[in-house]
Image (cartoon, rainbow, N blue to C red):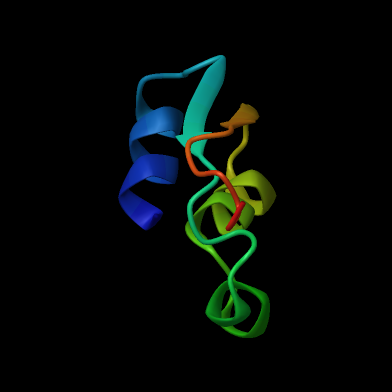
Length: 56
């Protein structure tokens, strides 16, 4: 996660795209997920795309 944020800053990215894996899990809610952390720490826009079905 730190590497993604650092690379985005270094390359002056306009947008980071990450999958939603971990957002809906219990561990993700308790410990925090990578998509959530990236969206809070990145200095550019972050698009979280649906890559998992959320247990459906």
